[in-house]
Image (cartoon, rainbow, N blue to C red):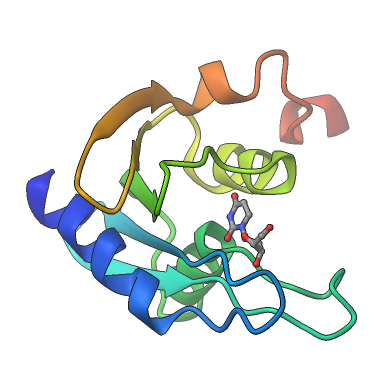
Length: 126
Ligand code: THU
């Protein structure tokens, strides 16, 4: 998991954040042990901004990955995933460990089901 966390921290450098200046990096570990990174990419219209977690997961899906073992997210102060990302993490990953780290590598581990209790998901659509 050290490698996954280091990758998320490194991805902070790629963040495009001219508005908030708040850089976030993420990295997802796929079932076949591939690590795929992402960063937040901001829009001048703010609402079109894509968070680092979703950038990483959508990149992974676009590369053909659909099974995930863990996710790491990094920011200067160890901010937790936003609500929209919690939903997407649950939808695409189910219950996985989420490593939330600051830029120095101080890590907190949370399960994705703890981040989004009583989640709405595909089972409700049946
Ligand atoms: N941000 C993320 O990348 N992930 C989160 O889960 C929380 C927020 C980004 C979005 C925006 O670019 C900046 O952090 C400030 O909200």
